[in-house]
Amino acid sequence: MVFHGQLPDVKAQLQKLDIVVCASHEEAFPISMLEAMACAKAIVSTNVNGIPEALEHQETALLVAPHDPAALAMCVNELLSSPRKLELIGTNAKQKVLNNFSSDVFGGKVLKLYSKIKFHIIN
Image (cartoon, helix red, strand yellow):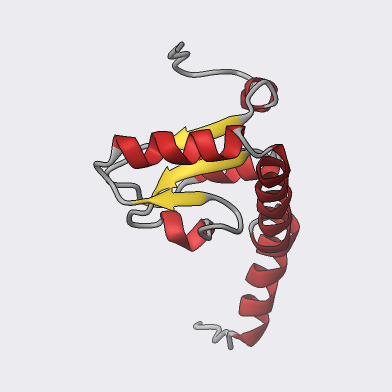
């Protein structure tokens, strides 16, 4: 296990991985998980705070309760023993991030919101 700290090219490092594991006990919104999803990586994560907003159990990740390292390990083993499931979860994750969290989708949502706002000019 290597803890890299800040990296200039996260994508290059993610491409080297088979599975991304997030063992957070608390997490706001999981940007690192979106990065892993964009690289079509299978994810095993705790089901806390903002994580289920991005990840769906058995679809785009395997989610477990926090503070349960045995469950994390079991899910990692499940994916390692099933290359088909490993690939399917990674593919689903990438599709979800493209459909819901890409810059084009985000920009479109912002423009749609602004088009609904009535602006008042104050002199």
